[in-house]
Image 1 (tube, rainbow, N blue to C red):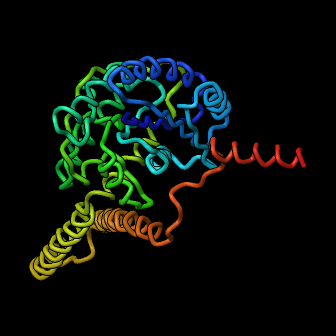
Image 2: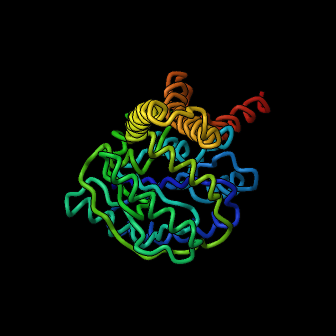
Length: 326
């Protein structure tokens, strides 16, 4: 029988993890009838609630459930990478635990891979109903922007919810960069992808862990990871303002020779100096973003660190039992 790994990143999701498990078990029964087994890997990304303990309890009652607890909150990107690296399946799916990724689509995704010859089946939302209007507006503008400045294809409304072959999962693992943007990495590695559309689904329970500021920083990660256009923009801005400065130098010389009074207009001069200073700092900030990413990459720090897992807990339990016997 084939094995399908379900990778589920979790951060403070005690309210919804059991609900997710119940729903995914219904799909597991459907897959079992066609010769496919499941393993469900909960990646506890440094949760401060009972997420890890619930995952442990589920593992005790169902050996298909596995869990991996990171030593701290490394972020969703690191959690996804950890799940991919520790998955064993012939096929690998990435899902959110909040059930905004409908488990009912898994069968269609699987059939796209096994019967239609696709390497992955991905999902995108056709609507953003229920989201704050401002967040939806900026999300759409972001996708328009990154499509213009990046050679990598980005799909508006794309989710991390995706089912892929083992070959594609291994290709993603080969990109072991520290600064990760999964939506871009999935497209950069290529492979044949089928897109499935669905309307936005609200969380089954709990609250989102993404703030507007967090999403903004995440969007910058995507821009710096898959485009050098901002660097080119800063160079263009520098050339443009150098040309303007040269023009004004010529203008001041000609005005002084013809009309005299070379020192008038100091308020406008002060404004220009402040404006140019702001432009310089802006361009320096762009350069700094890319330099910071390079600095972090050269450190070669691990993407994540494991605190415990079902294997570690079992090994510790066996060791304790051995000590008690002795």
